[in-house]
Image (cartoon, rainbow, N blue to C red):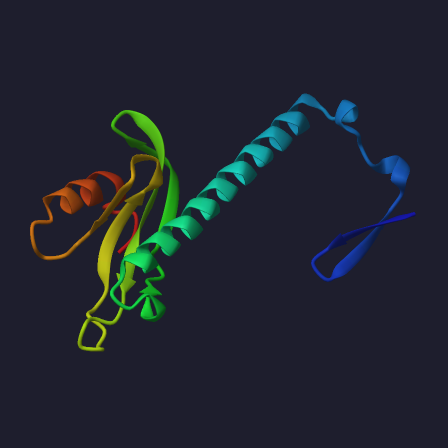
Length: 140
């Protein structure tokens, strides 16, 4: 018997009952391929999210005080200028020059195009355009 681990349990399985890639039905092969594609997509999103957070944090006046909103998410299904792009949309808060938190501000980050746009209440037309086309309606 073989023990397959999942969570905190173990299930005893007869090794002869395990299917190899050649034993899979076409439906099982399709499901396995879809699972693999989703896994790769999630890994790409996680990698971009981690990178984006590091870059955004480094851009804050007091990087150590940076807090990201729960809505900060990477999307791998976006298009920017006709090209596939992983886009990170979210919110960030950090201490200002007076030592107080300035409030959460939404941001858009696209590493493949070297874009970091934050809602800064000044001339934010670039941010508004990117937010509306890539993030709007995806989270609050």
